[in-house]
Length: 427
Image 1 (spheres, helix red, strand yellow):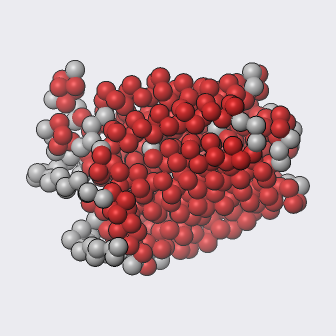
Image 2: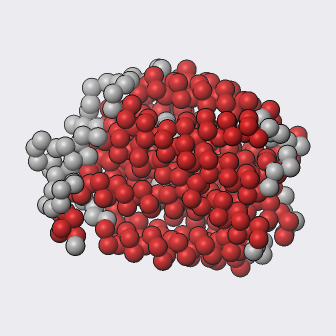
Image 3: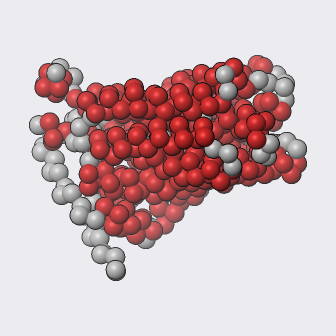
């Protein structure tokens, strides 16, 4: 069957995109699950939102810090192996959460174990797949794959919220484990291949043979070398700061605390999760279109528009509660912008560091995204405790987005430097 698919009318790269999309949808849903669990855990154990938010923050941080090393592990052991191991770890960590009795166990299981495993199959996986399998339509492929980040919310959060509300939060984590192990694992094992050359193909749109680089003997060293290369460039730090703010304003704040903020204003958990799901629907449109635009327009200007409009929207959010129409409008608008920043950021990373280094260097840029998300996840819960509402957190995040809009225009697009020599790190 694989042979027929490889030599079919449509390039096998598009099937790899489809399978990777399914994987990223599910892992994004797994990562977002704590947003559904905050209030049920507060009610059952009496833990404060600040205490629970520590685990969420830790999970987001590990989600980002794992990415550079998982990208390097993919270079060494292959994409399929890394994906399969990550899915097993997600299932084990999530199911073990049902047995916890203390906050440190939540920190360990959902923060470190599940956070690290979902980080291994996250947006950097999309960058790796797009750069390995595509020469043409790379921006479009990146847009499709990164749209899955919020699509996971669309598919999973309303169902998980319903399970947590009607049957208890443990059924939500059992659902996460079951989908990871019984649905996604077999699909990845059967269809995913590491590179087009492994099935006798060249990347989509390649006009000449593309050489396969040798597998690194020390994958973690490769990850650290990627950081060393990036840190020498001022453009890398501009990408890091802007993507830090991207994570702060999406996964960290809105993704983690929107349901809780809605409950504060009289909404049900299912209604709040449905708002996030609506964002996921429009994120598919927004991020796919962003990928298409990235192939045709200056990615710096796209980023400036995305961050500027996002900033205005999140500043307005506290004043939208109480109006169903205003909240729906916010969900639609914010969904279109949710991760539309990823395709331009991947493109600028490839422009500055070359396609061979794009996966690992972008993984470090993405780590800053999750550091921003972790900061907002904790600060959102903390400021809610200090001030009694989320208004301060939303307005502060909006101001940061306006700052990122200005920084985006300062990023340069130099000549590609794939031939850049790598100085070995001292032992």
